[in-house]
Length: 114
Image 1 (tube, rainbow, N blue to C red):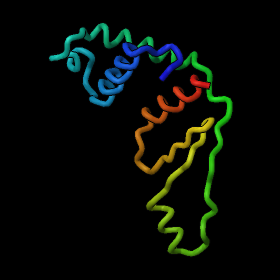
Image 2 (cartoon, rainbow, N blue to C red):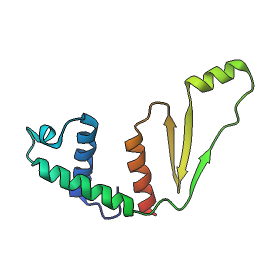
Image 3 (cartoon, one colour):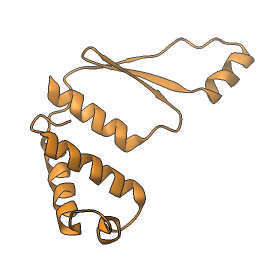
Image 4 (cartoon, helix red, strand yellow):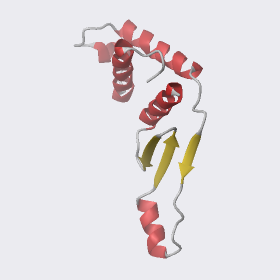
């Protein structure tokens, strides 16, 4: 993920992502786990701060196919909208309904790896 991330930080990044996706408070989410809500909040803050300080990718290339002009092709594009993103040697295909937070984390990780 981020350049400084260790196994511990990676584990906490996943926990924070799951917590945010749950819609629960930190106290509610921590119930049944072997960590405190305060630790979860600490890692959420640390990961957010470090992500904001992480440099953006130096180069990102968007590849877009030329659409066909037929009405049938337009309907297919509308229902199967997708976007190809290339960062360095990595290619990501994003389709309608993707997880925006996950994409944000992946792009940040790719940017810090360069």
